[in-house]
Amino acid sequence: DAGRDYLNNGKINEAITQLSTAVSIDPRLGEAHNLLGVAFAQKGLAERAKDSYERAVKAEPQDAQVLNNLGYTLYENGNYRAAADRLKRAVKLAPRDDRILNNLGLALCRLGKFEDAYKSFARANGELTGHLNMARMLERFGREDDAIRYYEGARRIDPHSTFALKRLADLYQRVGKTEESKNARNALAAISADTNMALSGK
Image (tube, rainbow, N blue to C red; front, top):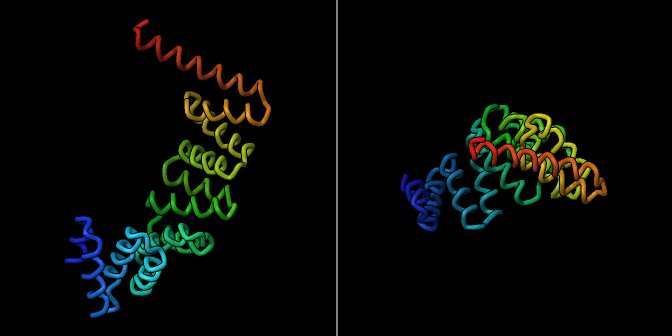
């Protein structure tokens, strides 16, 4: 309890001291191991955080949040396959948890499983956000054509998505499709004109 209070108040070193004492007294305290993992993660001690989360999972194998914490730490450490495995287990335990679904989407992207990643993002926040999240990730990977496909998917769902249209205008220009880029810019201009007209009361 003291360790949790310290952690909630941003006193990370004090939290680590209290939680370390707790798990030394009773190594089966899954919550203490999990909180210790959170504290280590906030200190930037990724390996120690992973070790604490693994102990927490061993003590509480059916705790979706503990599995999520371990999965995300593995993802941050570049261990994407193990991350996806833990996060899939977490999703089975908490199938409507947005944070877990988004983390699973991130891990699946890194594994190149883009359709599965999209499904995870879409389950978390809806189809529009799922398309936008996938497109942004694919842009980071330098996969312009695939990013365009997902931005176009977002545009079909919401033709007034200015973010999707801006990115499409830029990406089409980048890949040499000037006519498509021009069409996206024209659609943006039309939305802007409609907005200005509505604001002016005309």
